[in-house]
Length: 121
Image (tube, rainbow, N blue to C red; front, side):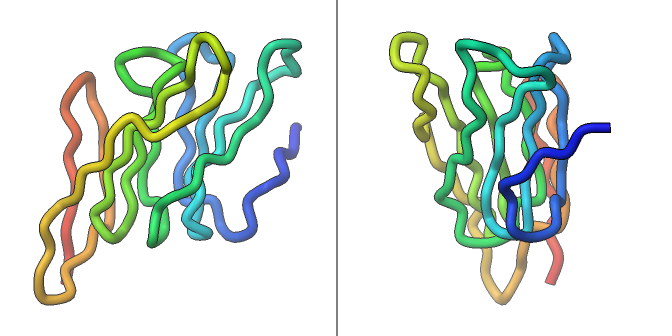
């Protein structure tokens, strides 16, 4: 059993990388955390921030462990990218589901290159 500190509210989503060396966690505290399963010399756990509501889904992208896709309850869909030269994580792109009348994202799923989101009032 291993404990990973750093998120300040409930963890709402966890996904493994294809290589099973890394995991990404999303939280009600609006953060995404990228962690390594075992300590690694060239890897530091990171907490990219920027979402305005709870994170409902987070996955490693098609680029492997250097890309993370996250979705928040307000419809924010972020692509986080890790620089090969600096190792720093930055937002590669931000997209938003247009929502009117109090609609919010309740769930999301990523399969291959298809992202599906569930909306609710």
